[in-house]
Image (cartoon, rainbow, N blue to C red):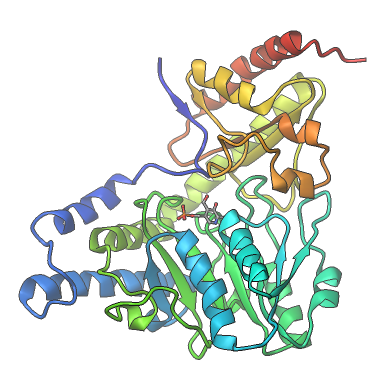
Length: 389
Ligand code: PLP
């Protein structure tokens, strides 16, 4: 049975050009970039090249990029690193209720060590209220961390506006944004965004797993969270994942290719068709999160009387791979913290399905979902005894 993959927010396959760019660095060009011989220098130059590609994409200097082992690590470095360097007796942090666990759990750990954390709520549309942020900023607010685009419902935050409010209210407060889900689709120029720190990940953009990056604006006080040989200007010790970094650089190059814009238009058309048709043909279904402020590839819909996990399993049996929320939280039967923050009841949050599209999807995939999903929902509703009154 041909498989339909609709879980691009969880991870993406590597672009063949990424695989090609990486392969030499897994075989003949295997040198340690810290070695001074030719093998090492070749590896070191390849890292430098990838750093320049990322810098151009983000509109920053190459020295402002730190490669990490994942976006989770980049988020941790941004949060713990900034708080450590601030040396404030009781630091205050602001984040939102809908962040990825890489941010939420870092904040929670700091709260356990005495930091104060404000978790901004979001409206029904999944967007942070600027007025609430303004009110939350205090003289001891060391860092604000708000994601650019949400991994579950795809809502896009007004990052430039958020940065402006922070800098006007308290210029010393630093601003971090997790742009992992935004990179494929949105302008990530850090100057336009006004971010001091920005996180991205390789495996969400047709690059390899196990590599991420953190943009750190020059002059930002930050301390490492990993100590060792002083790689990445002392901010991330550990021999660099050369092939991974090269792959990340190539993935960014592919995003900059004009072809990527055309692919994104197609992805948006598929998304719109899915949302419109599903809401029309399946009764008691609703879209979660704003339609206007939404990533072009995200469909997140709740169905009364059908359980999310059961929908995902039934779709998988029909050759469609989707998800109930983020890959990190699947396997847990807790309702999504993002959907609860949007104001959904636990019951409705349990009945949600996330489908995230990517550049390898075709019109046939969309047709298949439109054909299969109503049958799956109807069957599950019958089993659960759901009746629309
Ligand atoms: N931040 C967001 C918004 C994500 O969606 C993810 C992955 O699901 C991460 C961070 C973590 O990325 P990584 O798998 O590279 O650690």
